[in-house]
Image 1 (cartoon, rainbow, N blue to C red):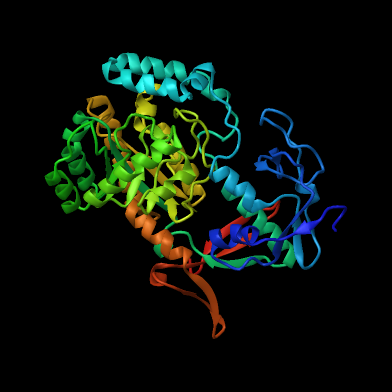
Image 2 (image 1 turned 90 degrees about the vertical axis):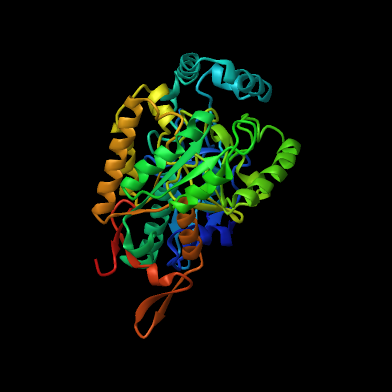
Length: 462
């Protein structure tokens, strides 16, 4: 017993730190039992919103706009354990897998969230004028600014929680710095990733032009194709995409927006998706319109998924994974979409500039995360949109030239993150070394404990 509560530890709590940092946590984490039976929102210090079960010091809140109980004063270190009033592994899973309540933007969003309504909408969508669709979408998202959680325009709750746990663990052990395996290969400060969902016949015709634009700046990217009904994907085009150094992935099955509406139908459709994955040689997947059910992706024979937004205030399915780093969902690696889509920027926000993209890039780069884009060949046909994309390409070129960013296609990010997840730190002959496949590209970094439960990072030798 600890302070009237049963204490228990578990591998998931330790893994929350060790999997992210690829290091041995300085002290074992232990959660206090006798948690409130109901899950809810609580804070772990100012500005750090969590969702899950917390030890019964106060009832968690049902919504984030209520006063959230702060459980941070109840953390205790006893020399052997860091005792926590919640299970951090469970909280991180709740965020990454969007297991928290997602308040809809408005009645319209709740209405469209119904499967029958979506089916009717996507049946009528091809018959709608573009201007009408854009107007409906602006109406649909009209109250998005009222949503407090996840935090717009970038939510880094998972990273901030892990940093605070690491800082508290270091403090409990009385150490100021700790070695870990750096996040990106060859010491890159952050990662840039470009993807292109091809939604229509017009977008398919624009793939060649988009490859030319990307090649001019040396940008690696992937193209996600719809294998059924929308258009025919010529085998020659798939070969051309790969020949020019780009990747081929799948974009759902038929882009009807109902892939995850029913478990039985999904299992049926997943068989077709898996067949096309083999035919196209695709290792990655993105769901149409970012509709998703993270755990179901285990049925797809792909290595990685790209269907989860970091913050989804402006997507048909609300929520967000609250992280700017890749993470595993079983055997599938999730590569979250961490910036606004081009359609959202142009036709929902009415913004024909790179201002929002630059803001998101700066925030994510400041956390050393994955800056991932989704720009459709369908929506950059107009000169006004094309000029914005060309400006974005210039920004990415500058980031690569500065040496700070690693620009990689999704398959490369997947390969690296899987290699990193198998690496270990070892102490040999008085020095730290990294062991495991791909370790020649890995770098050692140090986390230094700062005040207020924060850490800063320094690359070894930098």
